[in-house]
Every structure is written in structure tokens, then in C-alpha cells.
Image 1: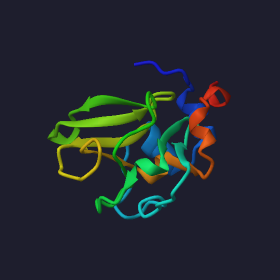
Image 2 (image 1 turned 120 degrees about the vertical axis):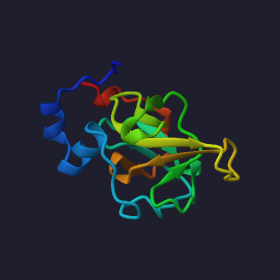
Image 3 (image 1 turned 180 degrees about the vertical axis):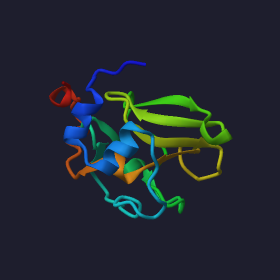
Image 4 (image 1 turned 30 degrees about the vertical axis):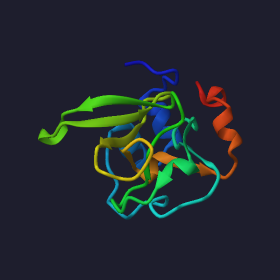
Length: 146
């Protein structure tokens, strides 16, 4: 699959730290409860891709799931793509940034959370940056495209 932001691994390594590269580009997972945004619940703002800075989630999409990773019931429309993931002998749905293809985590359905979508986007904190300015969601990722 191709994405608007087509940087090489070398280019990504120049702008991401080792942990960001491992998670965003190599589909890694951070340890549960270790992420900056696991227990971060602002009333306003936008979570963007740590790699390309594309807006992904609004603060009001976030909910307390107790899973050890930031959880969102929905993304900003068009911001996240879904792929079947059969790694480790499991069938899951991987979620990636639709601008750069960076690995965010996985989405789970039907777990019974009282959210509008009954979905849990389980996202690695390392994959995200937070902006308290909601205007980031109104823009696009043009500035970050290479």
C-alpha cells in the first residue's frame, strides 16, 4: 500500500528516535502502562502522528479503557487505515496513519465499552504527539509531506 508521505527508512531514522522508529516503522508495541498518553485525558486538543504530524484523534474521542494503552472510540475521518494483521497466530485489525503508514496499534470491536462506536483503538503513545490546539484537526498534513 502506498501513502502520501513516502520517506525511506533512512529518512525516517533521521527524524524519529529509536523507539518511535521501532513502533511506527517496524510495527512494534510499547509495554502496557508505560506510555505518556495512557492516562492523559484533556478536554480539548488533537493527537497527531509522531512521524508525519497528521491529525489522527480528537481529545474527546479518548476514553478510559484500563487496557494500558491510550484508547479512542473513533478517529478523525480519513486519518486512520485498517489492515488485517495475522502476526503471532492471531487475527487482529492493525491501524496505521493514512498519511505515512506509521503503525499506531490495533482496533478491537464488540468489547462492550459504552462508547458511540463500541470500538477501541488501542494506540501506542510513542506513535502520537499531543497538541492542545483543536485547529490541528481542521488542517491537513501538507506541511509534513516530503
